[in-house]
Length: 304
Image (tube, rainbow, N blue to C red):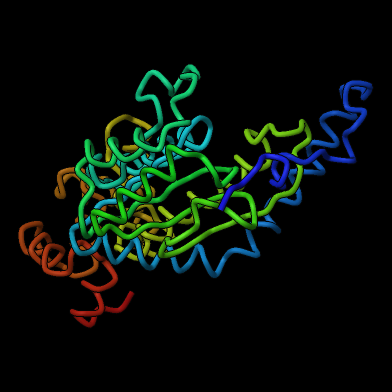
């Protein structure tokens, strides 16, 4: 099926901004704000698909697979951003969630002309990153027709990975043959075709949901607390104390003592306090329940 730019919602003109260059500064920011207000409602229409993607990806991760984002331009940068935030937020290994952008690392800060136009480039990157059965691959393209992403998803399918597409058009070429298609239709942009605006905001919201949902399912979050936080600076040390205090209803001074005994591991400190176990035994329990605090406590019949 051939897709033309003129057929894409993301490329049509926004009637509310046809005289944009005549607007005052206040009018420009007001109309952008009004247009942005519609994005969350567009995402809402795709929640069932997003939830299906989360369940599919979480299953892959729980069974030893990895999550890869493939995209070009803004879409690729959003994938890289989401992947980069997982280790500090959820304590994951950097290899668990990876972002790949057409044109390589230099494309992160500067456009690489033509990098997205060749399907073979996407295929080669999938091979280079060692995507295999059991992994999950998310192809991101606002237009839904980026050749690089089409190639990446095709090769990922050939490698028997689970594949998900994220686009901002109802009919998207990248959605053909995927396990889950997420098409968030945000409508025409304030500046015609500038998908770094509403489309990018929608994509960021979707990726936030995907990784956050997966990490919750994997036990990287207890209640709504970031218990896998890595204590790598003073701010995060204070955050870890607050997390332990909130989770266990102890003072921050007591939380600090627990963290010291747990060698800075907030999750371990919480289990120690709630079970009364020493670090070694509490660590053994966490390993048994794959690091999931709630499963540890339910398995040991503790009151939360």
